[in-house]
Image (cartoon, helix red, strand yellow):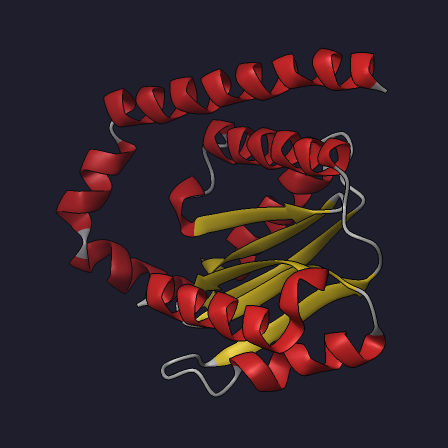
Length: 193
């Protein structure tokens, strides 16, 4: 459902704003986050009314900046920051990393997910500890500890599998591999500049 919402939002925004905008659309549990850059405040104002009518979209978070399109260097840096934040979340033993979606735009880290207040605070703390992060924006849906317990109990078999050491190690290895690949881009980009 979130994927369909995201595709519809991207198509509608492309129709409304054309190619002058650089936008990223992320839908999580039917909450649509729109980041990126547009040329004018009038274009920015079109985002929410364009996306909100999409069937099943519960809300729209408009974090679009009025600015020139971000550079390749900026976007590469955003990928690196996202990877480092995800790695920090995976390393933390007191948070379910798979419950948090990380999006980075212009050094601003957006955290989405259904989490408890404790998990939200910890995720923000971890994200702020990553070099290059300008700001952390919480786009969380808050759960009580009781709601989380009910969700965990309902999905206990799945949660046990995900939390197993083997799955954790696989996820961490994948994150480290991506981090190594992304960091390898920077010397090449700096040589160009």
